[in-house]
Image (cartoon, rainbow, N blue to C red):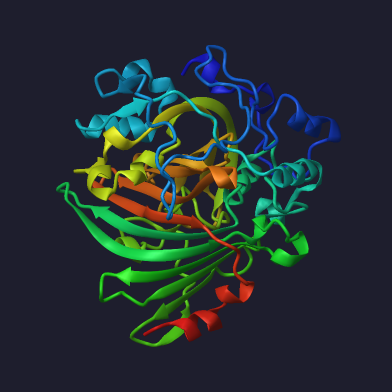
Length: 446
């Protein structure tokens, strides 16, 4: 790896393993109004200009948008170059180990690199809250929770891995979305089938503009799924409360049509195989990492430049028949760009268990989304690699990133294509009662 890409911010070159609980100083927070963006990224571009200066969120309406569709905002652009197995040695310092493995494994796989657009941002009130959080937010429970932030990136100038991974979990996100999606599974022989079709109501009470820290009650995200296909699953529902309190068991409920009742489902978490993808991934691999962080120790390795999937509206706009080819996503329709990312390493905590004992997360500095994740087995061998693709949503002034995740099992030769978006709509926030087990039970059709 070149010296330019090892660690950009010298203050993070040497990190202690202990979880630091203190917020940054007022003087350091002032950088959010000068050398850093309001969410903590480096405002300047890189030396050669391949990463441009950040100039604010992308807010230009996209022609053809409507009815839950967001076409490619950069449809006129062509790839600057492509990375294949034959030439990847020229770019390997900017590739994750998982991407290298895919290039080596599949002759049809490639990375098309486009001009970089730093489209991520947030409304001004989120910037204001983030500036306040920089000096007030603190980790609690040995890094497994935090206080002092609401409607904000809690740690825009992260001091350790716990802070960085919390930034990912509560990253800026439209407060209320309705998403129709399908889940596909790629088999070892290169075939693909739809495992499930569903609609989801997502509500981030943490990002309700008129809310407050007192009102969201430590539940930063609600999910309510309704499965519509295949027929034998139609009518099943699932409800998730993502909470800051890791001492509680996972807050998940499931409505089963055959039983006609709602039951607790705490195993819908961690490394339990995901039934919506026929077990082809683990539940906590959704969105790069979903929900709970208490089974790992987290280390902030530093920052580097990497090629990552970005501004990937086209991947969804073309439809699933074009978005996939045997064994992997279709390189013709996946946009990659050069961005700066935080590298965070997760290793199994003492006394804990997880099927994936080590992971590396590559978190976009602008959106705080884990865009690439590599998972290693007990022998330290690369086992799994994930890619997260978001949608540019101009009217939200941010990216919608709680969407598609491609999870490749490199040893089993399978693909879990999670939440391929058919329609994404920003909707008015629902009352919190809508996300209660009783309401889900009373509104179930079967």
